[in-house]
Image 1 (tube, rainbow, N blue to C red):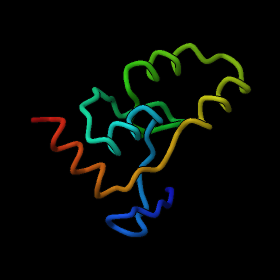
Image 2 (image 1 turned 180 degrees about the vertical axis):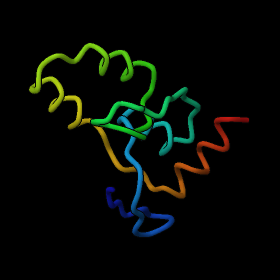
Image 3 (image 1 turned 90 degrees about the vertical axis):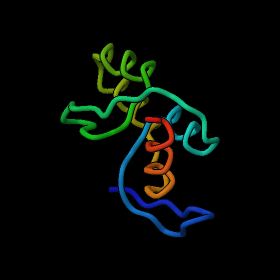
Image 4 (image 1 turned 45 degrees about the vertical axis):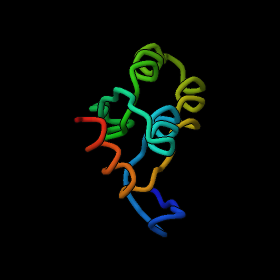
Length: 87
């Protein structure tokens, strides 16, 4: 679980997302995502590009590089974005 300080909602704890999804949340832009079921990143929202990248990871150093791009969004903003994206 991660902590983020949102300018709208204050301190929030919760989910993790790839950087592309985080940018889409912050700019209120539609982007397709998939919650990961892989044990290393279970529940993390990944865009299609990051799903493909994650599936190609074979080395621990590659996994570390990938994980460095995973971010915590504001959960309130992410849920509002999720509702908007599904419409």
